[in-house]
Each structure stands twice: as structure tokens, then as C-alpha cells.
Image 1 (cartoon, rainbow, N blue to C red):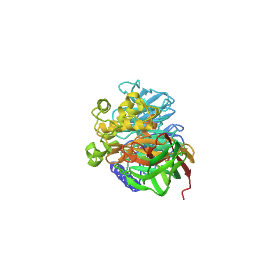
Image 2 (spheres, one colour; image 1 turned 30 degrees about the vertical axis):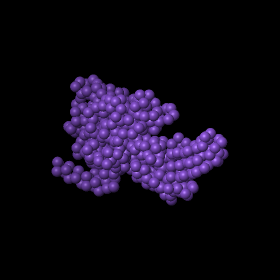
Image 3 (cartoon, one colour; image 1 turned 180 degrees about the horizontal axis):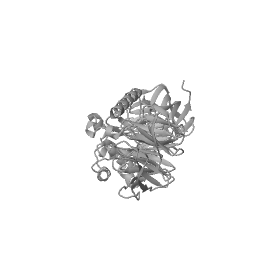
Image 4 (cartoon, rainbow, N blue to C red; image 1 turned 90 degrees about the horizontal axis):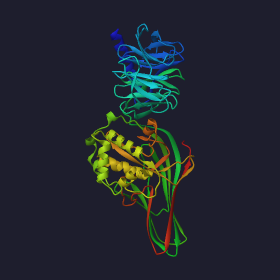
Length: 536
């Protein structure tokens, strides 16, 4: 029998690995119909899958290669939900009875009964020592004390999003499914923080299981069981491409009695990126120079002289681009050490700057308190991300002040959030920089006058990854995680900078410098226009 099981699992593994070529986390590599139309909980016993059905009140043992029912036992109650396997026995949380049962997998005999700490149990999982339970009603995940039968929750944290309908443990992380947002989350069980967000394979995600290599997910609406990639070499995924014509207009209006003697206008020129393809570009006027600054940012430079009062100088950049949503799949255990970061990256992007002041005593003391003894690049960044989003409030005070002042004040713009985050990361020895973008504001055809800037960190094994503490200043763990390694298709990134630039200064998208005669007033307006066009 043991030889048959090993042969079956080997055949399944070979098949799934073949299907998994060029895959990404969350991709479906295998699926089959469920044995019933009301399936809920799911678990894996080392050889077979088990799934519960609350209409038939049965728990089925399935062949993971074919989905065939090999064995079935009656559920201990009448509304079976989450299932877990402790290495010898099944556990089942029952919503109708508010109980969690330990079950003999051969005949369904109830061996032990404990009270459920919630009246609406969802997912259930075994971590090698004890049970974890998802509260689908209160959106919480809790660890249960099994030393008695009271079902005492000894640890509790908020669920990733709106509900916890499925739960499993892969030996390092918890995984949770949410039927409302149709997503699956990788969760750090020590903190409750969401690390990965995957698209669920169907519209009503329920039970989850881990077989040692793949995730499995029950979908209540499609009545299907899906096998999903948990981890792959693909570092990111692109989807939802948008084609747009983006026009950046920079206007300088001259007022007063004299002349604007000399005007330099600098426009940051966008380049190809994993999620961003530049299909065409043009400038008005044609007379300009192209340069690169010390951060390797391409800049179009325009010079105007002796502009009289009452005239307007207009500089325009037109970009045709295809922009996709990008989602990085960052597994902390796949991130290299600080020592693995290339020396030129570390030297350039941990250097100080007038907006960072990394050597300031306040920054030095604060980063020590935030980071502590942590040496892992991902968790250093995550701790700083959490501090900045928790202690800052988004208010545009006017001007861009240095990080120590902004952190003490506790309010700031997106640029000031970025300076604070970058300052703390660099003080901790983690390379960080910023990017700036023209943003879709609402409708596909829209006008942007505010723009947006956010930080990126360098993670060895992944490269530059977006991490936006201002965007992630939200209560939901899922919404926080969506601003780490994720970008929507609303951003045309023009600028990648590490600090003061010889052309752009501390600005992004554009910058202007000028010399005037006395009694001349200069008014500058800059805005980005989006116009969609079809992808052929």
C-alpha cells in the first residue's frame, strides 16, 4: 500500500511539475470536480486530500491525481466547515454545533470534542503543534490551546481582508482565503502581516490545503478543486495592460515689468520597465538636449532666453505607453542578505542627502528602536514601512522638509513620506530610492496635477521593489500588502532618483530654474493628461 501511495504521488508530482513550467504563484496547474455541491473544508494527510460537504454531511478522501473518492466518513456534526490533519487524525470545525472535533479517519469516530472560540468557524489548520482557526464572521485568525477542551484562543490577529474562509499551514506561513475579494494570502503567523496576495482560482474560495509542494483550494461556486503553484522562479506577474497617450505640459507664465532673462526646463523622460513599455515619444519644441544625471535618469533639457512679460513658455512631452499592473511575489526566505547586495548599489543608495539626514541623532536613535537586531532586508524594510505608515498622516503642508523634522511633526506629503522611509532604510544599511509618476485620476481620460512619488527598496534576489508607506497607510493587512511589491496600471513612471539631481534637484517629473530682471513674477503650471487608445 505504501509503495502504491509513493508511486501515485510521484506520478502526480511529475505531471504537476510539467504543467508548472513558466508558472507563477497562484496559477492553476490541475483541477477536477468536487464530490458534492456544498464543499467547504479541505486538508491533506500526506497522501490524500480530504474535503467536507455540509449538505451530505460527509467527509471524503480523494485521490489527488484524479479526484476520485476513495473513502468517506460521516461528519461529526451537521455543518462541517474547516478540516485539518494532525499527522494521525482529522479535525473538523462545525458551524452548527460550535465545536471542533478530532475524528478517526477510518470510521469517523469522534475521539475528542472542544468548544469553538467562535460561532462562525471558517478555515482550520494544524501547524505541527496545535490548531489555528479562522473566524469567518469576525474576520480573525486565532491559535487554540489544546491543553483542555475549552477551545481557548491564546493568540488572535485580524484576518487579511474581509473573511477567513480557508486556512492552511505550509511549514513556515499560514495561508488564508477570502471569498469576498476572491484572493488567497500568505500570512506571517507571528505578526498577522500579509506577505503575498494571490488571485483565487474561482469566485467563491473556501478550503485550503498544502501538500508539501502545491496549494489546493476548494471553490464553492464552481464546485471544483484547484491545485495551485505556491512558489516559482517567476518574480512577478503582469496583467491588465493599458495603452495610453500621456501628455506632460509645463507652462511658464511671465508677469511684471521686466524680462525673464534665462529659463531652463527639465523633463524626466520615462524608460522601459518590466510593467511599462514606451511605444513612442516626442517633445515640443524639438530643440532640446538629452542628458543623464548621476542617478542614470534621462532628462530632456530646454533653454529659453529673454521672454517678455505677458508671454507663456510651453514645454510639452508626449508619451505613448503600454502600462500593466505588476505584482511581485516576494518570499522573504528567497531574499538574500545585506551582504549580497552589489557594492555599487549599496554605496550609491545608502548615501546621505539633504532631505534624508541619515546621520542626524534623531534618525540614528529612531532606526535603532524600529529595526532592533533585525538583519533580514525584507523585515528591516517591513518594520520601517509599518512605523512610517502608523506614525505619519497624509497632509500636504507645502514644501518638502527633511526627514527628521517630518517624522517629529507626524504629517507630510507623498514626497515627505518617501524621504522619511528612505532616510530610515539607508540609516539601517538598506538601499532605497524613489520613483515619480504621472497618475490616472479616476476616468481613463483624466488630468493629473498632483502626481505621486513613492520609495523602492533593493532586495537581493529581486532587485528594486516598490514599497509605498503612504499608499499602505490603511487598516487592512491585505491593503497594506498591496502597497509592497504591487503597482496598478495607473502610473506612468517618469523618474527614478536617489536624491539631489544636477537637473531635477529633489523634484520629479519636471523642474525649472530661471533668472529674471527686477519686478518680474513667474507662475508655473504643470499637468499630465491621459488619453486611452486600444491595444491591437
